[in-house]
Amino acid sequence: MEYVQERITTLHDFSDPSPPMPDDVTVVVPLRVVDAPGEVVLRTFETLADNAPTRVIVPVRGDRDSVNRTAASLRTLYADIDVVWCNAPDVKQLLKDAGMPTDGGKGLDTWLALGIASEPDGTIVIHDGDNLAFNQDLVPRLAWGVDRGFPFAKGYYARIEENRLYGRLMRLLCRPLVEAVRRRSDDDLPEYLAAFRYPLAGEFAMDASIADRLEISPTWGLEIDVLCGAFELAGFSGSAQTDLGIHRHHHRDVQGEGGLGDMAAAVTRSLLLGLTDRGHQIEVECLQDRYLQTANEYIEQFAADAAFNGLEYDESNERAQVARYAESITAPLRDDRLTTFRKSGLCAECIWKAATVD
Image 1 (tube, rainbow, N blue to C red):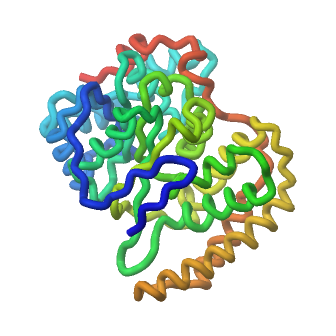
Image 2: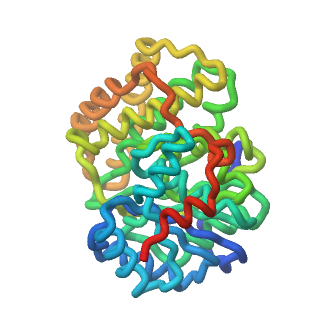
Image 3: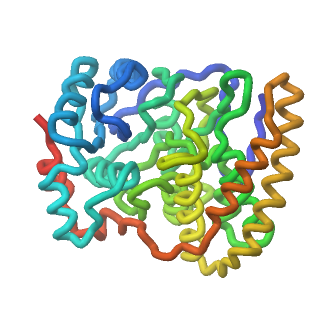
């Protein structure tokens, strides 16, 4: 435990704080799987009901029957849930008419939900639905920072399971890649990204005035895109990070479709696009070399930390992952980020009506 404060305000867990739920909080929970929500997801919504937020928006995608089954399952636990069918035919038509992509994943779903949620004033909290350690303090802790006056707040936590370190994409790709850029840059964006202890956390909160002003990749890369937007809209003084303890999530393989390798490519693309926006000239080969050097320095540190805590640590496997992630550092061939909802010309109420399920 420590109490260090640096460029952004850090809200530590000194006393297992359980702040009251602020008024006017909308919670957005993107769901990756919509068919027959599992025990973890159902427990999350059962716990969320105890918080009694003003509104809960659940963006999902799938066929009509599976979305309806999901909505029915969730509403047995929490009746006041707005399920947004993100790939509903009418939604896709509205996106097409606006010149927006009609296919995507978590990024597009969250972008649509944020557009809907930004209409009233208040605080918007976004969190994943597959957190095995979800508890009733998570949403109030995130919302508290915004209620306190920070327009943007990000959660951070430890990923320790099965007597070993997880959070591999954050530890082995995101942190060392940001650090490799920061060491050679005088720009504040890499400094801002480096200030967050878990930049890839899917748990964050923001003032509603920010929500429809973010450019977000339609697939992965969402978390980095949000941070790049928060840097412009909130900055160091308007940002906070909140200690959420220890989290446990489902793990992905490195290889294969939808694995960490694919996610690494999306995270890297979002980071490089954000840097390009700031005028950075990216020399890919040089950045790959600096990343490899920095990541291997981090591995030495993680190995020492794991040994100190008696955790298992497979150093050769970690280095193999770093080599795999280095391959994802390539110049972005295109900018696939969604324009801000505010600039898209879309009507939040129209999207909501088109996405409503029975």
